Image (tube, rainbow, N blue to C red; front, side, top):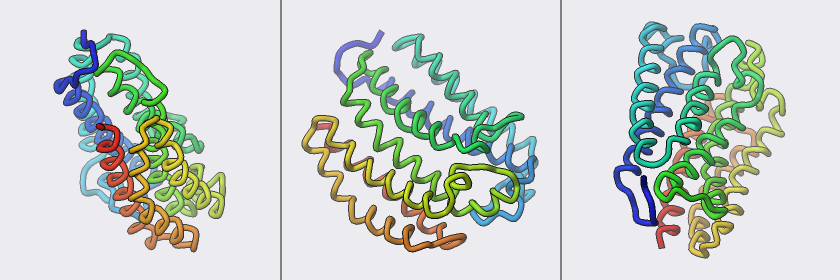
Length: 257
């Protein structure tokens, strides 16, 4: 069993493998599920493998299964080193990953994708990684998970704003479809703002260093609010990913002291 507050490099590496394998797996499974449903036809964003015919649906599905298998194997080893209870979390993550666009009633088609992203990319990833290191929970680590979840949600929101009209036509009721264009843009800005408001709740004053990335957030907010749409949102999606990376690096460095 892991114990104490010392850094456990093996647990950290296994946590990284699980997270990356699940991220890759969900991208493949979304590509497969959307592709066989035909919802990726006439796509505005980057080319998808299944819909474009660059790879067969079965090959993409196989890649998803292999990615999930790697996550399971790493998760089993991680559980043996920390706590077997995390296997329940792992099972939930697998179900959420596949169920986003897969199965007969995908929850991503009902406007629930952002909730799942916040929970699994934010709370579960951050709190779970901390737990396998320390076997403890704390309010501070939950507070640290909020910006990570919110910025991950922001990526999904701007992606869905870009695809909103096409998604509505094919019956894909994402949150952007449900909220409408203007409210979706306001929600995107709210997610960026809540990231900066939540960071100091960790109790570490150095978390305020994340404000160094605020000019990026303000620039993004202005451009999204101004009404950029369709292909014009693709560069803003990339910049949202850059903001998330820069925020996370600054936040991690601040919390390490």
